[in-house]
Length: 82
Image (cartoon, rainbow, N blue to C red; front, side, top):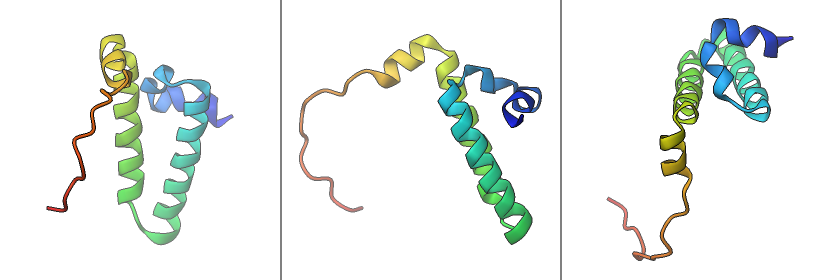
């Protein structure tokens, strides 16, 4: 049921796969529960912003290809703490 309601509220979910849509719905429900029960709204906002960014990438085939290509096999060594 929620999967059918989400596109009317978040039209960008059409760019997500079925599994991604289920994951977004789970994340959204968890974040909504936190907002209602714990008065923690930052998680809800972050969940929506992050999934919308994912959908934006998936909506652009060129960007998707660029961001999902294999990384070079070069090892640049250990990353030191700032």
